[in-house]
Image (cartoon, rainbow, N blue to C red; front, side, top):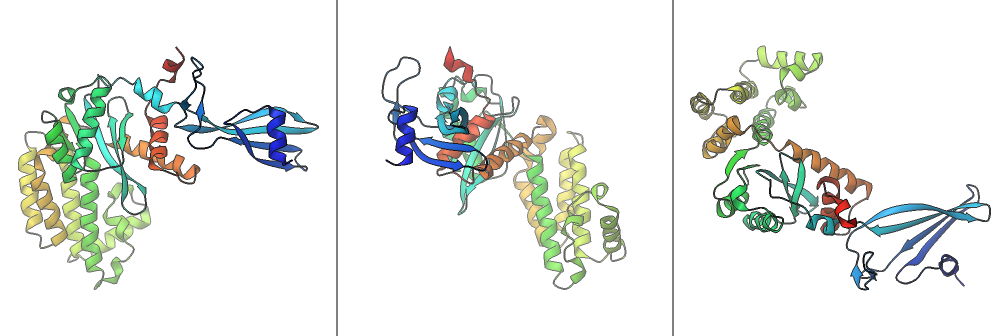
Length: 347
C-alpha cells in the first residue's frame, strides 16, 4: 500500500478529497500531508447538504493535526473561498465615479481591464478584453448589482480610443476626465524621445533620462548638478528645450479653470513651433483630447487607486508564481480589492 493511500485511510477522507503527496522530515520531526481534489469535483452544500456544488475559487490553507508518533503533522489543502457568491451580493447602486485601466495579465499582449469605484476604492469589475464592448459588459454587470448607467457621472481613464467609444455608446451622460498621471507619462515619454534622438550626436546625454523627466526638487545633489551643467551651460541642447516645455506644462495643473483654455492654447503654439517632433506630436494629442484634460481641473479625480490595486494583484501573482488561467487571477483581484462581504454568506 502506498503511503498516500495509508494516510488517506487513517484520516478517513472521502471522495473527492485525496492525499496526493506526503513529506517526512526526521530532522525537523515533521510530517506534511497535502490534500487536493480533481478539477470539476463537486461537494455537499454547507448550507443544505445538497450534493453537486462545484468549487470555483480556492485558497491555500494549512492546519496543525494530531502528532504522528513524536512528529508534528500538518495538513495542506486548497479550500473554496466563495468569491463568486460574495460578489453576487455586492451592491453598486451608489457608484458615481469610475476609474478604468488595463494591466498586462500575461506576455503576448494579454490584458485585464479593471473598473474601480473611485470614491470607495474598490474593484467593481474585471475582464480579459479591452475593446469598446468591454465598457458595455461593465454596464451589464453594474445593472446586475443594483446600479444603472444613468447614475455614473464621471469616468477617469487614459486615451485608449476603444474605451472612449465604449463610454460614448454605453454611458452617454457621463463626463470623461483624462488621468493626470497618464498625461504626464506621455509628456515624459515625448521629452525622452527627444533625448534619445539627440544622444546619437551628443553622447553626454546617455543615461540622463531621469533628470529630464523628474521635477528638480526631487533630484539628488549630484543629479541636479548634472542637470545644471547640461541645461544651463549648453542652452542649444534640444533636450533642454523639451525639458523647459515640460516644466511649463506642469503649471497647467494649478491653473484657474477659467484661465486654463488660454494656457493650453499658448502652450500648444509654443510646442508646435519648437521643431521637436515628439513634442509636436504630444501637443497635437492634447488638442484632440482637450476637453477631457480640462475636465481634470473640475473633477480632480485620478486613477491612483488603480495603481494600488495593480500592485496588490501583481504581488499576489508573484507570490503564487503565476496563475493557470486569467479567471483565477480575476478571482484573486476580487478577493484582494473587491471589498466583498463574506459575512453575508453565513446568514
